[in-house]
Length: 178
Image 1 (cartoon, rainbow, N blue to C red):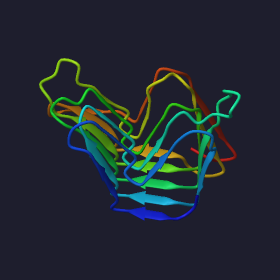
Image 2 (cartoon, rainbow, N blue to C red):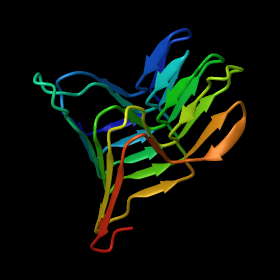
Image 3 (cartoon, helix red, strand yellow):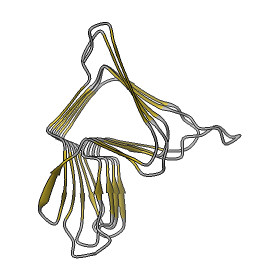
């Protein structure tokens, strides 16, 4: 996938909402390259994920996991916003349960927000949220991968946060990248 995704919205006032610009499901590997995601929003009820991209259960028919790969792309001002009973709000830019590899890509001012009285309210991963424990690989090879200004907000309390995962984060910087 390559292109520009500006101002897209996925909305569900009650239940689940996924992927402001792209939602992908089973049996497909996702490769995103040379793309821009600006001001995309997913807004919903109790389960809201992936302000720009949501990829879920990407696997081969034999059950082996398929990756999500993002290369030379930019994510600016994307948001995942949950309603008053929202308790699983994740990934202001990207949410997936698959392995995610990010190469020479930038994440600026993405956020997740949950605004409810629920004691279960969660907002996870201002830029990237992985709820189910797979790993994130971040590479900066001769160029920068920047995470800046990303945050989560729960009931109005803003916390700087770029990545949430229950799995591993692997960072590999070489050839002048930062």
